Figure 1 (spheres, rainbow over the protein chains, first blue to last red):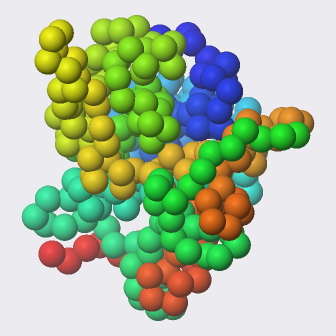
Figure 2: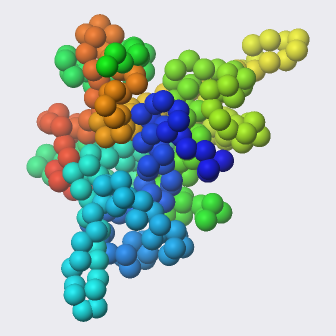
Amino acid sequence: MRGVSLSSLNCSIARTLDVVGERWTLLILRDAFNGVRRFEDFAASLPVARNVLADRLATLVEHGILRREQYEERPPRFQYRLTPKGFELYPVLMALLQWGDKHLAGEQGPPIDVLHGPCEAPIATRVVCTKCGEPLTARDVAPRRHVP
Amino acid sequence: MRGVSLSSLNCSIARTLDVVGERWTLLILRDAFNGVRRFEDFAASLPVARNVLADRLATLVEHGILRREQYEERPPRFQYRLTPKGFELYPVLMALLQWGDKHLAGEQGPPIDVLHGPCEAPIATRVVCTKCGEPLTARDVAPRRHVP
């Protein structure tokens, strides 16, 4: 079913998954947020075939989520950096992290604590109202067809 | 590479993707949040093979994200409902939605507006500090190895 483009489903969730919905892609982005930049470092971090990794990185560059920049001339070497558009995927990754920390961590607890530096307090990913600021669940929201 | 279990990567993001990281799975959950409950309705909503849909639903039930309950005796018919654990995946879906709304919606704008009912204001998915409440980006956080 990989051939079916989810963009045809008229929905921003489907469209986003069409771009980043491959599992390796989100793990590549996780690594990028953790400071990984070079092909060899992504390859060392992820048990993924090199051609698949190259393909996923190229897709992320094509969509403007990563940018590829040369950092060495001889031999030519490139690194991959998050763009502002890529940076804005942070809540996706932190929402996945939060759920895994709560439901899949086991007795040892989560492997990594992600803390707000100055406060040294845990972070959370929340759905909030942009007007009243209240944290929301699915029960509090109403979908409405957008009028352009 | 589907055979590689990402759980071996000691990370809550990888573990979560191991459970829900298939694109159809997240779209099934989107539909469940939108009130879809019956196999035939999921099948009508998603261009996915029925055996794949059945497999993904079974996986979600196995992981306690959906529960399968009989709603008719003759013939026996079942529906799929989000559990509390499933309900907590809402920020993942809303984070995907928010990014797609911003970056992939095109000139028409997003197809659906998701509003906080009482305020009729847009929602947002934010990473925040649980202590000071400030909205955070990746630059504000520090990962630290968890000490059990």
